Image 1 (cartoon, one colour):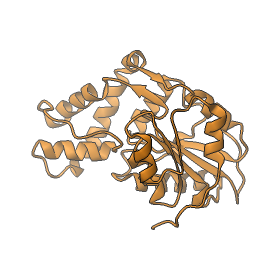
Image 2 (tube, one colour):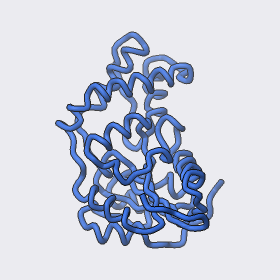
Image 3 (cartoon, helix red, strand yellow):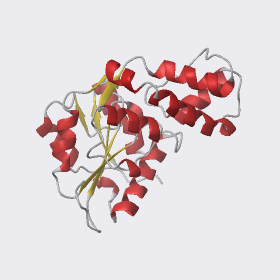
Image 4 (tube, one colour):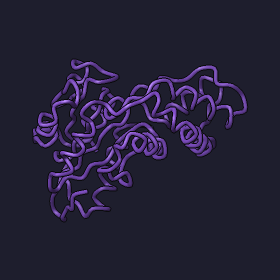
Amino acid sequence: MCAVTAGGGRLVLWDVDRTLLYVEGVSRPVYEEAFLAVIGRPLERLADMAGRTDRYIITETLKLHGVSDADPLLEGFYSALGRAVRSRRDLLRERGFALPGAEEALDALAEVPGVVQSVVTGNTREIATEKLSAFGLDTHLDLEVGGYGDDATVRGELVRLARDRAQRAHGLDVPWERVVVVGDTAHDVAGAVDNGARAVGVASGGSGPDELREAGAAVVLADLCDTAAVVRALLATTAVGPSRR
């Protein structure tokens, strides 16, 4: 991790699934196990997951099963989801992989003075850590200052939390135009734009290039394969609207 001094710096916040890595066919069984453990009956329907936080997914899934008040159950769900993912660590590696160029992009940014890298993800902190470490993508990420799916429901809140945590932990003073969010869905982009941060879309997952641009991405990349292009996109500064909050 690069040392950062007070009064300057840049914060790069990566989405995890379909931006840095891809895992197929694990989320459903993880939720099935957690649902059975917490609710005591089988999972019948799972809420839309694309670009959503685990808090949102749990809440909406419970509604689909007639449970309107999710709050008392959230901590139990987070713990059950974490146990279910840990027990499938080998399956993560079997069914998943780091997306091409992800490791190289993380390595290259780690060489840039003043850059702090972390994540804003719909995954809980524990799930994100398990996934990233399974593919060796956690080396240059300060996961203590990320924004996670057990922090809030809305992506914009996760971006604000991550910035606040990074500023406190690293002695940073990072204006919003020097905060960059990288993600593959319109939800990722909206979370950046809602705060006046810069969004870089990667068309490797949930949203196509046009949808990412329409959501407000300053740059849209097809993938992370061209490391030099990725670094240029993440370090560029463009005018963005003021924070809405």
